[in-house]
Amino acid sequence: MAKGRLDGRLRAGVEGLRHIAGGLGTSVLAMAALVVMLAVAAACLVGIGLLVVPGLLRVVRSVADQERTRLTRWGPAVIGPPPLPATTREALRDITVRRELAWIVVHGTVGFLLGLAGISLPVYAVEDVTFPLWFRAIDPSLGAPGIFWWRIDGLADALGVLLIGLVCAVLTVVAGPGIARLQALPGRRLLVPAGDVDLSLRVAELTATRAAALDAHALELRRIERSLHDGTQNRLVALNVLVGAARRALDRNPEAAAEILDRAQDATELALAELRAVVRGILPPVLDDRGLAGALDGLAAACAVPCRIDVDVPGRCAISVEATVYFLVAEALTNVVKHSQATFVEVLVRRTGDRLSVRIADDGHGGADEADGSGLAGMRRRVEAYDGRLVLTSPPGGPTTMDVELPCGS
Amino acid sequence: MRIVIAEDDALLREGLALLLRAEGLSVVATAETPGEFLTAVETFRPDVAIVDVRMPPTHTDEGIAAAVEARRRLPDLAVLVLSAYVEPAFATDLLTQGSAKLGYLLKERVGRVEQFLDALHRVAGGGTAMDPEVIGQLFARTRPDSSLSRLSPRERDVLALMAEGLGNTAIAEKLVITEGAVHKHIRSIFAKLGLAPDDRADRRVTAVLRFLESAR
Image 1 (cartoon, each protein chain N blue to C red):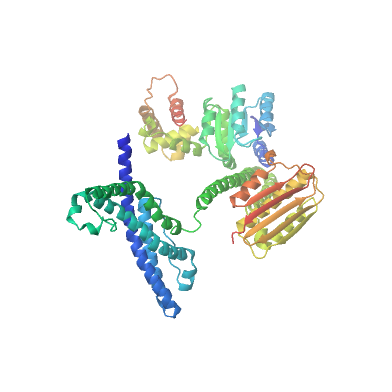
Image 2 (image 1 turned 60 degrees about the horizontal axis):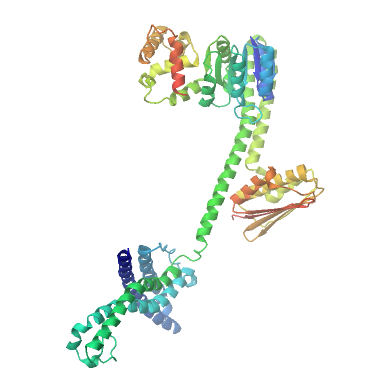
């Protein structure tokens, strides 16, 4: 057991040593880049450096990429950056480039010293541990390896140096991995895409809303299937039956055939009307014709409770977002009419930046509950599918306010 | 022929009744819900019930359950189920009570009045009327290792038409071959399905049942 642990430690130590050596390599490159950087900066002061800045940035990028490759081979993948911006001005404002420059400064100095220290430890360990074997061969005034001020006067001193060597060896094994990690830290922090911290959170959130979107989508499809099936298709079947009957009646009783054809025409008109309703339910054409404000005005005009619409949205939003708002307001107004006993309802639509906010407020008796199947849960799913937010405030006794926020998508 | 219609869509219900009455058939009652339908068949004891698959309350397959229940209560009742789309599961549900006096057709077949009346009479007379679409889908579901897979494409055509409920003359007409050729195919089907001539059961029925069962 103890032997296994020791083995593991030793392996980790060797592993750490390898990383330190690799890090030392890139830090030398970084240091060289840093020297060039300083030279270019100095040249910029007298005005001729700007010409070589693009070349410098390419060099910096290539050194940073070396480090990214090294870190990816060793631990969590360091995702590569987007291509360098086309112009120098843009490049110098680019967050990735700035972070790379910062990394060059840190890794070219601190990273180099850490690498040097990390590599020296095992070298000293070997020299010091073997020192008693060869100290007689050198001039005592030269001192111990790396400790020149220690005058070696005999075996006792040499054995002391051996002890220091042992300490160095232990340090190599124990502290090596830590030094390697410390040396890699600036790269892991500065060379990854900026803003990565909330990336995983964002992924989880998007996964959830995507599921909600699929749910909402399936619900929509079910609704459309129902209305096509129970409406349009049945009308067409009836029409088919009537045409068949008319054809049979033609020979026997032409007058009856005319009457049946009359009915067939009625069925056709019904089918067309229902098809129109279904199509309007998929995407209201009025949105295209008159925009969100016009479409909502239409809803208000048809609402049994007096309704004021106030839309102040410069420009158009994505059509799917407008359609969502339209259906949301339509459903909310239906709820107000059916459940709230309100005497007045107000719909407010505003755009702030790329967010569209909708407020539907009535003066009814409140107490709206998402659990009672009044379509509120479906509305929330629709909103969340667009990465939006729905807040319902409806205390018993009222009033009820629904606040919805959606990204405009444009 | 006395008929009860169970169909929740008013326009279609009236259209069907109009069509059948014009053909001199007697529509004794119409029903909008499964409950009304079961009451009507028990009250009027019709020869045939025409039932829509989708009925209230959920508008999914209440009609199938209602048809199965009606056949259970009145074993002599012929049932013709109309469906807006083909669902082999519906057919196999209905077939658990046997294929006699049973029909399952797509709604659009009603427009071809002669064929629809033909199917109606066949079902009322104790036969079967399966929509070609249903048979096609059931065929598609037969396992490759079943004895049915040994049939030649022509023999499968013949068996499919037998399963639809057609007689030899009608099959010959449909496939544009002689009745003799139909006989030859049927003998070959019996042989391949291992139905010996001395079997007591009607081999024709057995063959069709074997096919329908294989798809269950």
